[in-house]
Image (tube, rainbow over all chains, first blue to last red; front, side):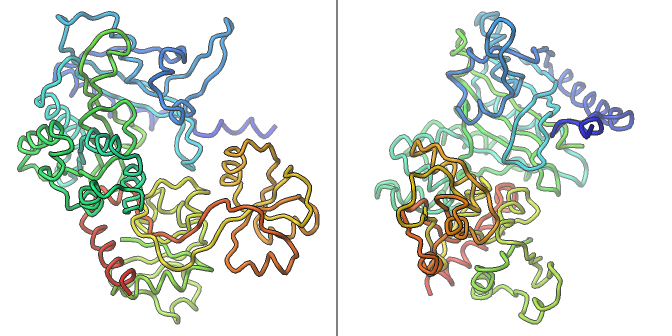
Length: 293
Length: 202
């Protein structure tokens, strides 16, 4: 039988050598998180689909493996830690418990049909600060994410932006989304927004250009920019609008040095906990360890 | 920087775009050799099948390239499309023999785009994926309909078929990989500016 020698697409065992390397990397991350005051939590590998239905976009929902359990409920295999942590934590905390620094690790499974050869079982380690909406928390998380992959002579690149800028423009006129996504001016963009959209597309936009449309985001980014000034690995990309999902503010990605491989991504999601019954600002990031191997 | 050039229909025009923008592109003599990778002016030019350009760029094996919207959509390529070119425009059409029965089977090189087109209309039909000479499927009654690119309409006329509906307006675009764009913004912007200045203004 042909299936005897192979595994389903996107999964494979790690034998001794690879496992040892994986565990070494993992313990480096765990040490760094523990040292920075983060405590570990363990989240279940499966959960009901229903609690997340309202906040997950249909395209993202399709990325999870789902099945009906023996009681007839729709269940999904973990595909994203962040909403699961919010659902687990929100009912268990009171405002006095905050802020909290937490981290988690484990596998997520994603069906990424369009990404040929992309792994489906991914080992991730992530950290979050819950209950702290300060710019200091933004800067701390940016720095922590960068430091995890920093090595002498092999500097990462951290690209950051605030998703609320594009959201504010798109709220004024839907065609802005298409223009920013393609990075090309389209006919549907109204005259009043053409200047700012053109500047964002060409990369010439500055914080003072976007301030009239998204004053709060511009002020925060300006403070972050000042805090990380002098460290050339951090780059502000105002034109970056990709996949906001549940993100509400700062959004960043970490690229490992040299190779243009994205190894981590994260951002701020200040409305997520509210959906599970407890208001709490939150910021976090996730490293996909498979991308670092 | 590595740039993917589509072989076939768009190859000559794609090379002209970069040549006009002042880039040192492989010469015709170069192309007569069987090499697929050329290093010119600090840029690595790779020549791949037109449908593979979005795949190379999506996965970062090439940093940028020129691809038709047909191939971009079919591969669900998420790369940026900063420049739309004024040449090579065509239409993706739903085609059938005159008096064809209602759409139940459709042959195409673009199963994904065709599926989305049918779903958007609530039409339930079977898709027969083919890799070329798609019109023959309708001529020989393999399927009632075909979805294919139409440039001049000559192929459709020769086979005595009819164009029924526009599936999509297709144009070639410069595509730039997201990770490349984020990590090398200066290089990307220079590329885009040089192409826009020289190509779109001429």
